Image (tube, rainbow, N blue to C red; front, side, top):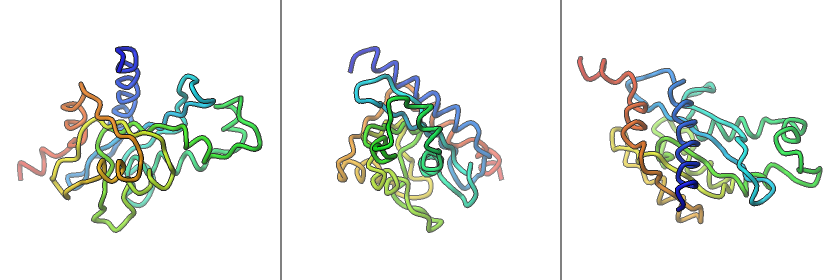
Length: 180
């Protein structure tokens, strides 16, 4: 990876960290942020398609699922504004095929709430690549999101340099729980 590519990945991961900081802290879940970056037309500069953070939408939702939900809610006019080269023949699925996901923590492979895991949502959307800030620690479950994505043919890249910050933001609000 060239230095400029590494800088670009850090830039998008920092945007995802900004999203994670918007989370309402809870001692029973992580604060995670996600950014979907689309490269349309192929090879063009990336455009932020949508963002998301944990618990942003109702129902104990996760960052990646929220970003996908918000992308799916974009109107045709909003898509045309983001991607002037898009025409009526192109669908959101076409955009997803050239979209990378940047997430501060490994997408979940199991949900204790019974909701679908984020790794499944990424696979179903057929996103191109997943850039991850830090692996999910075994605080709640044994996460296998990265291996699940790889098995489905989605490239996974662990971004170096922000692991400690991603984990610190993920555990925001946990000191109260640990002091009791």
